[in-house]
Length: 186
Image (cartoon, rainbow, N blue to C red; front, top):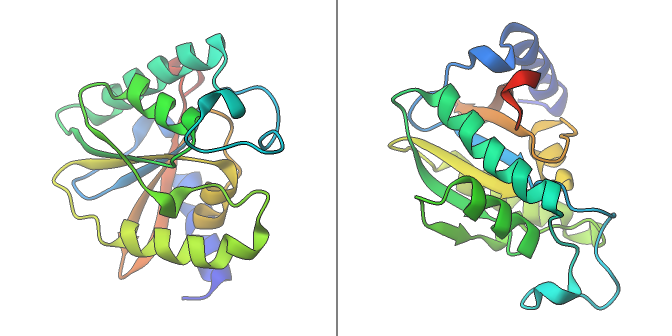
């Protein structure tokens, strides 16, 4: 399937599936952009193992993370989030842990930001696609990552705290719709 075909499928799915009426099933994936973290990129010399060197969630971001978990649980009904993966950045791990405190968050380097390292984009996205296409459930997988990763995987530029629901059909990703942190926005 060509990139244009995938983009058209994604657009069609978005037009036909408003965020408040997602039909999520076992094996589906929701890619979340981390919650509000003021700034852009990371400071020079940041280190993954040291949150004090990174751009982190604001108070509003922590509140948003709590709301995004609640919003997704409302969408799911009896279906459950059974896996949570996150980029190894502090803001993604914190978003995942606040939103889904009852699920063990697994750091995944395949979802690390390549914002400042565009030479890593193709390899990162290929690894992420491979992991995501292998998810079968049970339940829904949540991945908390960065805008560049989500845009590369879905063709959509998500807002902070926004989720993009996806399903793999015949090996290709199809966008099902958006999940917003505030249910009033859905």
